[in-house]
Length: 145
Image (cartoon, rainbow, N blue to C red; front, side, top):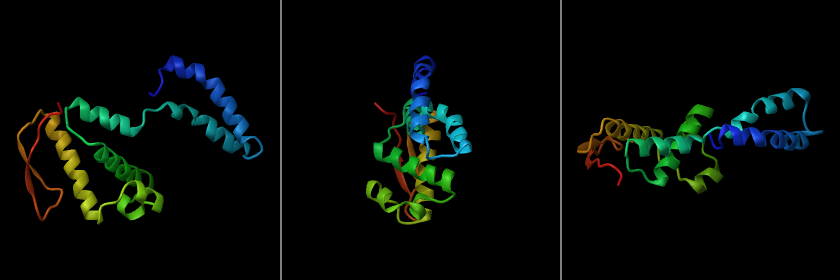
């Protein structure tokens, strides 16, 4: 959660009032009901926060751009059924350049998840990075400092 339940409950009436005002005259009753039903989603912990917490929990060193890439790819796959490299908008591509091919994105995701699993079992030695299958590279997996 972004806010504790107590804090969010205190904000809820003001949020509902603001949403009601914003939707007035621009929506149907059914549309308003759907928006109101989703208002609790405003307090959901963003996936990027959850992923970062997971990486920290298993002491996996991870750069911000790796989190951004994983989240962007996951979001496209979950919400649109396509890889980021296939469906990123021009605006999204400016913020995060997609990998060259669907296969490159797939193997990059696998590499990220492999590292998570290895760190989850406290592995701290050499592993094979298969993110580029034609050029596997031995790498050292060490915990974050």
